[in-house]
Image (cartoon, rainbow, N blue to C red; front, side):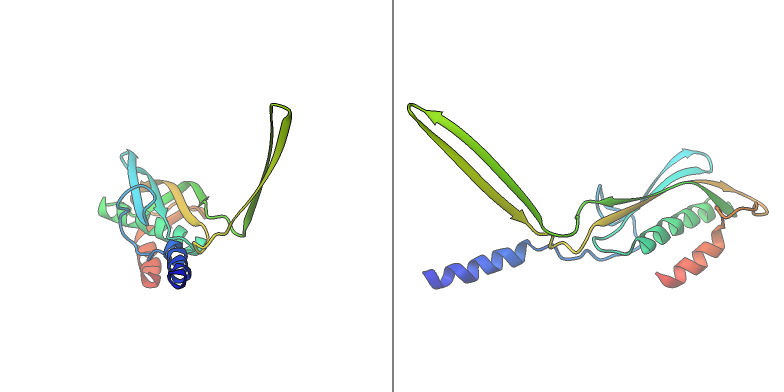
Length: 163
């Protein structure tokens, strides 16, 4: 019986480890799932988000959000889009071990007691997940000047070649 306990504990521990999620350019199936989502603010203006897999490079997550903006622009007949707001948020999964310490005391009758607790945890999930969010305004015709303005078809081609 004792020989079964150690392998069972090892299997449970390894089973609890989070394996990295595959990263694909696809719609998210729900909150905190890998993929993109968007909502229309007004005609030609969108809020776009791409929630990346745990441990995915932040640059890739940002590229996938830009690709979604380009795809929406082309699908709606626009030629370019301007990024008005851009954020990259780390969704938990902090690196390194964590240690917590708890101390308590009590008295009862003529006696008293002190308790001390120590807890540790380790991140086995492969790093944080990232979410890139963009607010974009789309337009037609010649592309305006500015580093925050992108040619929609050009983004599709350049980022599409990498993903």
